[in-house]
Length: 94
Image 1 (cartoon, rainbow, N blue to C red):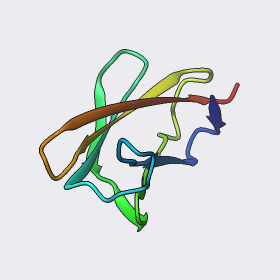
Image 2: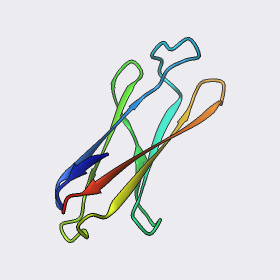
Image 3: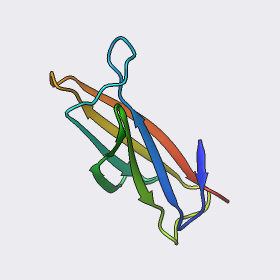
Image 4: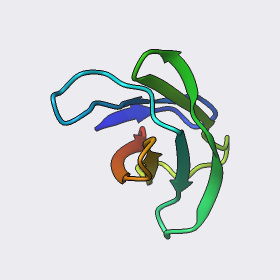
């Protein structure tokens, strides 16, 4: 699990692949960030870096509690409306 300092920007990477494991561009990639208590603290579209490679940034609040964990949920919708949900976690350093 990646760790960041309070006030630092977390960088969330998302790869999208087809059933043959080839990088592809979906219709949309949306990212939601949830705090330790499960409250949604950020949402938005991921930015495209290259074919099948997307990223989303989230600035951790300067007053974030040490050792708290955040969850990033990426919802990927491909051209045929097939939905994939990917999750990743990151933590505030002690």
